[in-house]
Structure formats: C-alpha cells, structure tokens
Length: 263
Image (cartoon, rainbow, N blue to C red; front, side):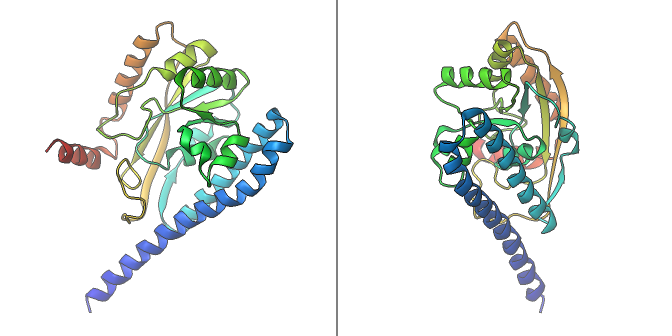
C-alpha cells in the first residue's frame, strides 16, 4: 500500500514535466507559423518589433502555465520594473536553460545573443530571426550587431559566462559584455538569478524529471556604467557576481556537482 502514494507522486511529477515541455514546444511552433512569413513580408524594423513582442508574450503564456501546474515558484517582479527602459544591457548569471525564456517575459524589446545553431532550430529559428536576435559567432560580428541593437533602443540580454554555469558560483566571464557596453555607451544592469534545483542546468538530461515545485528568483543587482578598460571591467563584474552569489540557492547542488567532476 505504501507504494501507491509513491507511484502517484512519481506520475504527478512526470505529468508536470511533460506538460511544461509540451506547452513550450507548441507555443514556439505556433509562433513560428506566424514569424516565418512575417520575416519575409515585414521591413526589418517593424519585423523586429513584432518578433520581440511576440516572443515575450508567448513566453509569458508559458510562464503562466508552469506556474499554474505547480512546476515553478517564480519571482521576477524586480526585473519587471525595467519594462520601460531602453538602450540597456542585461547581464545575468546562467544556472538553467530556462533563464533566457523567463527573462524575456519581463520586457517586450529584449534582444537575445544566442548560439548560432539555435537560429536554425525548428522551434526557435523563425521567431529568433524575425526578432533579429544575434548569433554568438563570429565574435566580432556579434559585438557589432549587439552595439547596433542597443544603440537602436533595444535591451540586450547577454550572459557574461557565455553558457550555463558548471561550477559554483559562476564560470569565468567573457569580455563581450564590457566590449559592447563600451562601444554602445550603454550601462550594464546585472541580474542575480537564484534557483534551488539543477533542472535543465548544464549536463541535465532534457527528460530527467526533477522534484517540483522549483523556486526561481531573479533580482536586480548593481548597474555598471560603460567601462574605459574592458578587461578590468570584466574582472570587476566577475568578482561582483561571486560575492552576490555566495549564499545563492544553487550553492548546494552546484557545489556537489563540481565535486563529482573533480572526484
């Protein structure tokens, strides 16, 4: 008899996980059906505005779904205070795959820097191209495109680590954020993300089921002015995040996984 509640709990977790994954996939595919023809029909400026707003609203629907089914406990209220800002660089830490999705719900003019192969992805490609999201390679072209996007009033979302965190508290930072900030003459707004689950972190299998609900909190950190020295700025930014994340929710599971790799 004791096995029945355990089995029920396991099935419940699978249902939550697959509803979340399925809803995100369907939202992306549905938007692709609109984004693909719009990319060829609309001028670049109006197409980008539609694309960014559409992604933001579509991901917001996903956010409502994962909250309603009990998958996540979300706190994004701090970041949502930026919804009227422009010409800004958002620099968050990156513990999970879902980070960019959730942050994109907080502003309708987010410009993401993303892996080049994702621009060819069946779920994300059409929408990302319409929104004029920026491929992360080659680096020089990425920086030039990002500077143009920020100077045009966009809010650039760029993870200083370049990929999801594989050590605690953060990976080594790249120079891109500082270089873009310097050349665009735009401030860098840090975002501190905390989460208590390794779900969809680096190395987590897509269909491995976690414990629910997952706590996810994003708060605004310090805002940095454009730097004169990009390398010094990057070191300062990395030290700042290390200090802010000292007691973050992900400390336990990131430290444990780091220890496993060392061992």
